Length: 138
Image (tube, rainbow, N blue to C red):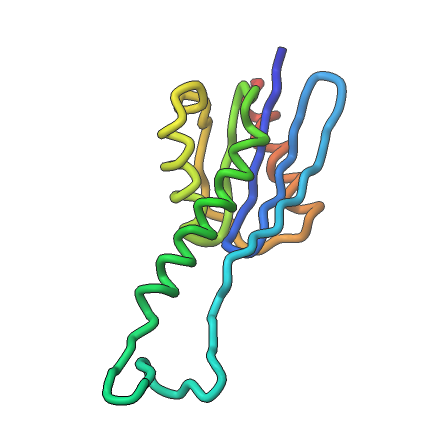
């Protein structure tokens, strides 16, 4: 039984289209990744506390990496029983997702393709995913 998943994602949200023999299911995943954290009064790369200079950049980057991993694991949670996985999107997030999928042994050989694409509407994304899987049938 086929259970195909097409994923369009960037760092803000993911749209997952699950195509089975009987139905199509659209899943939306919103990320909690902070784009830029600003502290009140921040105008330099460092903060001064008395005689100490504190650079919060490392802490911000660690928080962002944790949020990214959480976001990708949420997406991978939907792919557990996938037969084929198609990944597309405008940014590098799709490559990070494919690397995380490769770490999961049952899913590692199920990635059919990874392609670049522009920002699209929901209908365009669904059409692109359907077109990919239809062309794979032939």
